Amino acid sequence: MADIYENSIDNEEELSEQPVTTDPVTGAELFEHFRFVADKGQQLLRVDKFLAARIEKSSRNRIQQAADAGCILVNGKSVKSNYRVKPLDVVSVVMDRPRYEFEVIAQDIPIDIVYEDSVVLVVNKPAGMVVHPGHGNYSGTLVNALAWHMRNIPDYDVNDPRMGLVHRIDKDTSGLLVVAKTPDAKTNLGRQFFNKTTKRQYVALVWGIPQPMQGTVATNIGRSLRDRLQMDTFPLDGDMGKRAVTHYSVEETMNYVSLVKCVLETGRTHQIRVHMKSIGHPLFADARYGGDQILRGLRTQKYSRFVANCHDICPRQALHAQTLGFVHPETGEEMFFSAPIPADMQALIEKWRLYSPVE
Image 1: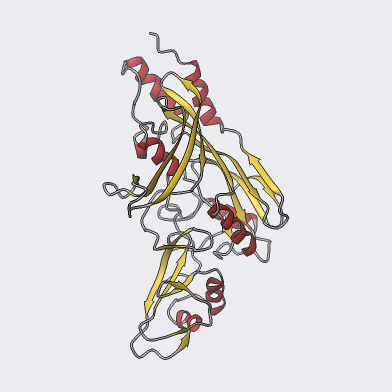
Image 2: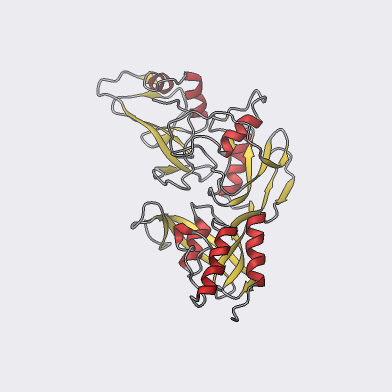
């Protein structure tokens, strides 16, 4: 059995597990890594000792750190390491990412660091890079790169859930992410995301021209009942999924596609991709949500070749996390960062700008 602090897949590509609860402080979705039920004859025993005896390759110190981070639940409620386990107690270890089976290995992978100080780091992730190690992606991820970059910082532990990435973006989405280098920074930034005080703006190329050209999509988002690898929208007043709100505005129209800016009020898995599809405008080249098909325009041979060339230029969903703003967790300073649209997506946009539907 793996270490209590092993990281896991980002819930971007595999969607292999579902969250079991949410963090009452930050609102982050929490995933169960371990579950034990105490025997009927269980004598009173500190929960850190109880877990240390049941989880291989894990020390009491790390279990105590997990408890400090709110990752140890007894009967569904967070407890500290001195809680005494009673007969039939259900003891769970939860984290803000699903479980995976391998320890994070530091790798010397170049990363585009936009800003860094002793407390936070902002990175511009390229498209194609997975955020967390997971099934089929055990190396080459952003977390592997961060482990290498911060290998000489004594207090930074890439396996410690009290620090690290505060939010995530999909493998094939490019753009800005903030990393907390201390437990206090992660708690502070997590609260900002939960309280919706952060500023996150994405730019996307979508099929068609949304009407109205400025609006809000508000639904619940949860795992699709038809396809386990997709997310789907559900009614806000229902029991399925969690509340998700996206504000969008059309910035430019180019015949059969539009350049759209999206501002996130929440941060659900695949949120922009699902919301734009739900209003009839999937992201261009988004294979998972139908955007890799020709959804607008006459299906002439010439046009089909043009669209195929566009896919060759940008063979991934045309989505970029362009801006990120938050209050510095230590200084209280308002910070704002911007990352230019990457070359593949910019070339795609320019190609559509030059396209004329006239034969």
